[in-house]
Amino acid sequence: MQSLTIQTLFITIFLFTFPTSFASPPTIENVFAQCLSDFKPSNPKSPIQNFIFTQQSPKFLTTLNNYVRNLRYFNTTTRKPTAIVTAADVTHIQATITCAKKLSLQLRIRSGGHDYDGLSYSSPIDFVILDMFNLRSIKIDSKLDTAWVQAGATLGEIYYGVANKSNDLRGFPAGVCPGLGAGGHFSGGGYGNMMRKYGLSIDNIIDAKIIDAKGRVLDRSSMGEDLFWALRGGGAASFCVVLAWKIKLVPTPEKVTVFNAETVGNRGSVNTTELVAKWQEIADKIDNDLFIRLTLGASKKTVKASFMGMFLGNSAKLLEIMNVNFPELGLKQTECVEMKWIESVLFWLSIPPGTAPTTMMLNRIPQKLIYLKRKSDYVQKPISRTGLESIFKVLLENENVTMAWNPYGGKMNEIPSSETAFPHRAGNMFKIQYAANWFVAGEEVANDCLSQTERVFEAMSPYVSKNPREAFLNYRDIDIGKNMNSTYEEGKVYGMKYFKNNFERLVKVKSRVDPDNFFRYEQSIPVLSSH
Ligand SMILES: Cc1cc2nc3c(=O)[nH]c(=O)nc-3n(C[C@H](O)[C@H](O)[C@H](O)COP(=O)(O)OP(=O)(O)OC[C@H]3O[C@@H](n4cnc5c(N)ncnc54)[C@H](O)[C@@H]3O)c2cc1C
Ligand SMILES: *[C@@H]1O[C@H](CO)[C@@H](O)[C@H](O)[C@H]1NC(C)=O
Ligand SMILES: *[C@@H]1O[C@H](CO)[C@@H](O)[C@H](O)[C@H]1NC(C)=O
Ligand SMILES: *[C@@H]1O[C@H](CO)[C@@H](O)[C@H](O)[C@H]1NC(C)=O
Ligand SMILES: *[C@@H]1O[C@H](CO)[C@@H](O)[C@H](O)[C@H]1NC(C)=O
Ligand SMILES: *[C@@H]1O[C@H](CO)[C@@H](O)[C@H](O)[C@H]1NC(C)=O
Image (cartoon, rainbow, N blue to C red):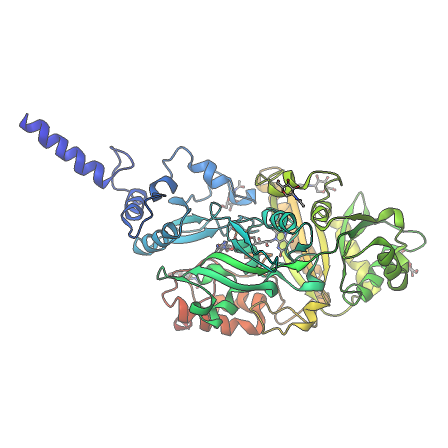
């Protein structure tokens, strides 16, 4: 009897200390999980135990995988997180920050998981993931002027929610892919096809709720204007966890007009060289209601150009503007499709008109998982016809790479470079995105696609910005610099490319709000003291 009681007592103590499994030794996973469970304050309505996934949890891999968007950073050798906390409450975020700090685990924050180099779910050292997908409420004010959107909301959910609540009278300027998370996408700038009219997402963000390194919940007035400035374009993951953004909604017309004019070789009597040369002259200067993205690539030994456009108005007005400014393209009425703004989101994904917006917009499961690489550049001077033809030659030699040329101008020219942390404003004609996608595993294919991307990027160097060669933070590119030792010098290499003259100010903000450099990753903003 006596010994049984002792045994019961022993089991009770053991279970209390290591609740995840009777037989588990005190591994870092268990200690972390215990720390989370002990955290106060806690919310009895949503106990954190229900939101912790350690490597032993049956749903660990599914949870990890659900928001992996680049297969290059997900295979059997990729380092897995010690745990994933799928926060459903502010106290879960506070607990995760406190316990990660206590156990010296790196924190990776994930909202939509679309980071091109997987930095929200992979790490070279031991780490935990704070996954924000449960925190995705969208609250639109009754006057339809503003909305509070939580970091885990996707663009599709925001677009659909706003269009639905406003009877298609409002939209929001942000990216073209509905799966992007508000957490990462907005804090990196947020670029999309209404940018020439309304600027970036960050130009339409008026408040934020965050949790800082000390676990405090702050908003714009309590965090300080310098931090609010940094969050708009500086990448929030260097500073804090974003819980929610307050966004300013923008009016959308009853009907927008979209088109996709493709050319292989000539279009009418005009060849691709001439069309691209002309596009460079007009794309950043044309009516602010019109956005024309040029995509260049090659297949079967031929260069292909596509001019994909969105006009915030009807097709008659669009054709009038095109006939004056870009008659060479010979855009026809039959190529123009009028639709609601919410439907245009699907058009940009090449989904046939008529598909119900709800299904695609609210779907969190991607159509297809791929391996990918992205890079970026900025062009400030028109590229000569000779230059264009040599670029086409390079594309013909590297058929697995495409380039998207996204026009700036309009509202982008009106906003000073120092207004937000995002620096690439007036003076930029267009931004390039280099893209290679592949669908099969294996080093050989990967290395081929990666080296093709490097070759095209290298060949473009005479035509793009220099000293620094500028890059867009949302088009994450780990190859432009890594900060493995958290030094100022290492950080400056990519920091100047992403942020230009805003880099030093970001370092100051970082040093004020996170002097111990808790919020760090391969391309985070360094602190001043490590000078
Ligand atoms: C298919 C596809 C299409 C894209 N299209 C566009 C486009 O049209 N326009 C454009 O501008 N970009 C585009 N991007 C790039 C995209 O904007 C960035 O990858 C963006 O960071 C994604 O945000 P996320 O929350 O989905 O990503 P995540 O991978 O979750 O996060 C990206 C970064 O933000 C940090 N972060 C995430 N959530 C938080 C948070 N709550 N608090 C603090 N830090 C956080 C992460 O730690 C990481 O550093 C595209 C990417 C993909 C894969
Ligand atoms: C596996 O993923 C890692 C990154 O996590 C990458 O470096 C490696 O090349 C990948 N291996 C294969 C075979 O794809
Ligand atoms: C909004 O959503 C509701 C419910 O799904 C639907 O019945 C309604 O038709 C939608 N309205 C608009 C304008 O999209
Ligand atoms: C394209 O057309 C221009 C004249 O309109 C011509 O000079 C040029 O050689 C052509 N380029 C190609 C690749 O055919
Ligand atoms: C690369 O492009 C070539 C030529 O278009 C094609 O045959 C090949 O399948 C592509 N490779 C990948 C990995 O997509
Ligand atoms: C980072 O520090 C390690 C040792 O701590 C050193 O071996 C390595 O060279 C450093 N890397 C850089 C890029 O300075």
